[in-house]
Structure formats: structure tokens, C-alpha cells
Amino acid sequence: MKRLQPIGTHVLVVPFNEERITEGGIIIPETHKGGDRKGVVEEKGRGNKWEDMNDIKKGDIVTFGRNSGTSVNLPNDEGKIVTYLLLDIKQLIVVQ
Image (cartoon, rainbow, N blue to C red; front, side, top):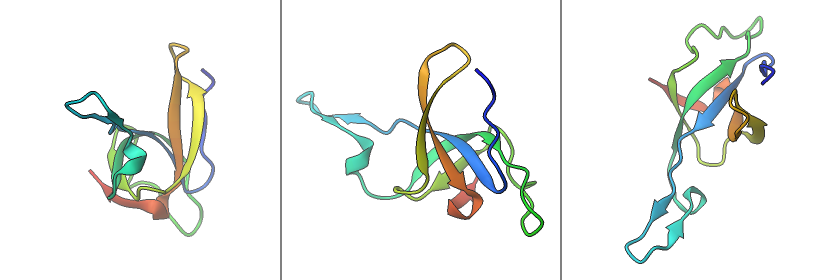
């Protein structure tokens, strides 16, 4: 896959799959839950003259709001389609 380089203060995140299956076999997708979400940073922008991106690095686990970011479907290195989220650094709540 050609590496996707976010611009400015944007971060490309692979969200954790939060799908849950009930005892009866019903799948409850993550979109029907409340609260914040987590994911792993895949790539980051270089920042701008007002904000520095040194606090975030590839592999960091980040927490962000449930409806934050823009969803992007791209192939990974093995050719499998993966859903990424493109977030601005201001949308991140916690960096672990």
C-alpha cells in the first residue's frame, strides 16, 4: 500500500473493533453504544507552526469521541481493506 500521509495536525487511527455479540447471537455494532472510542495511531501529520505533533507517535493508543473523525477505507500491506479514521489532534482526548 502506498503510505497515506496526513496533512498538518491530522492523525490516521485504526479504531478498535467494539462489536459485541449477545448470548442469543445478535450482533450489536459499536455505533449503538455510548461513550468514547479507542484506536492505534497508524500515521500522523507534521503539525503546523501553532501546534507541535511530538506528543503523538505511531503505535500510541488514543481515545476520541464516538462521532469524531472521518472514516476512510484503504487496503493495508496485505491488501485487506481496513477502516481508518482521520482525526484532527484537537479531537483526541487521551494519548497512552
